[in-house]
Image (cartoon, rainbow, N blue to C red; front, side, top):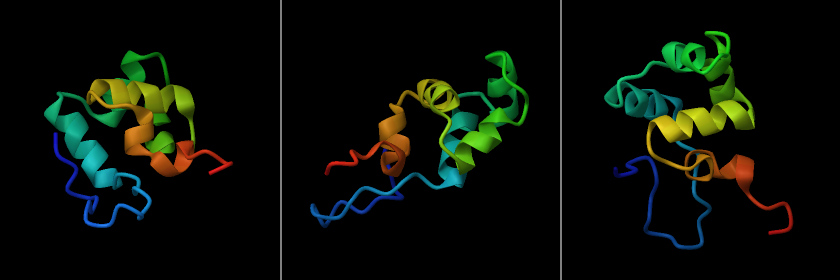
Length: 84
């Protein structure tokens, strides 16, 4: 799966977080909505929506797994090393 929201031309540039619409689209392609994915994993229907706005590692992992990615790929700013 390509990542059209990132520019690869500058190797020094920090990778950007995926846009919310890109995440939702990837989930839709995988047969999910944020609501259904949250509920299927025992969370409230709004959990996925919350995870798009703020750091929630458990739900981020569920979203990432559903689209075949790692959370660090989708939200690099949330997982960037503080020492770097």
